[in-house]
Amino acid sequence: MTEVMFRRKAYGALKEWKARSNGSTAMLVEGARMVGKTSLVTEFAKNEYESCIIVDFYRASNDVKKLFDDLSDLEGLFRGLQLYYDTELRERRSVIVFDEVQRFPRAREAIKALVQDGRYDYIETGSLISIKKNVKDIIIPSEEEKMELHPLDFEKFIWAKGVNTFRLLYPNYSNRKKVDDKVHHHMMKLFREYLAVGGMPQAVLKYVEGGSYQDVDRVKRDIIQLYLDDFRNMDPSGKLERLYLAIPSELSSQSTRYRITETIPNGRMNREGHRSIIWRTPRQSRYAST
Image 1 (spheres, rainbow, N blue to C red):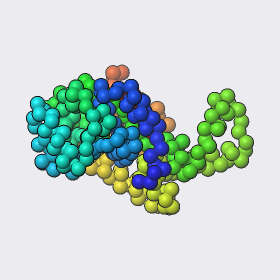
Image 2 (cartoon, rainbow, N blue to C red):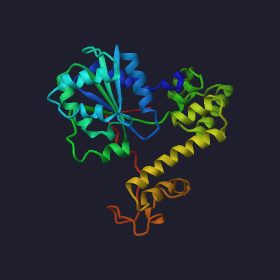
Image 3 (cartoon, rainbow, N blue to C red):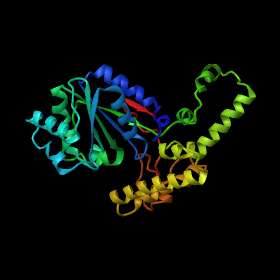
Image 4 (spheres, rainbow, N blue to C red):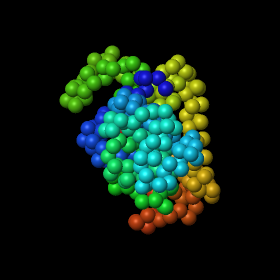
């Protein structure tokens, strides 16, 4: 990804965590697939620390995973990571990143011992669906903070397009003052582009690099296909997939409820006894950013 894609509010939240925590907690950056978790954390690790080791558990070898077998020998773990990744760790000046940690829950469980050791900082990334699924056999570390990463919002979208003056309009919006017509039309044009492109980083990157709306649409369809594959893996019956695919039609209807029985016969009743599901804003984690 290009550098412009990394200007995100979540970067500031990570800086605040690093300064406040000073190694007393690890940070888990979780979110839907393809929202830019790895790119954000990689940039942060390389910019804010003297050295970093990024352990990608999607590709990590069995030799790397075996280093976590004996947490009573942290010296051996750190030595092995430094040798394997050819990177020297410096006490309180280095960070170790566990990327795609949901693929190796034992590393997440190790966070307790690693944080208590105190030599380095730790950041984890994980996809929301998988990370909640793969925790039944481990103890979730209390030394772990969480930040949920969302797709790019409108402001981040126009930053990616090189528009950096949006903040000058904040006083107008907060005081409900009318902006100049030319400015208004320009911002509405950008907003319509955002509605068409969306906030998924890969789609935005394709667009700002000169891709057509058709190119962007192909990127988004590929991402949706990844989500559908996840749903099928979790629920072979296909119910989750049907619920997901029904969202556009439900949003376009006049109903304020997502009527599950329209998609799944004999759907589960809610507390009021109606066969429907009401969509609500999900509970926010301590950090939630774009």
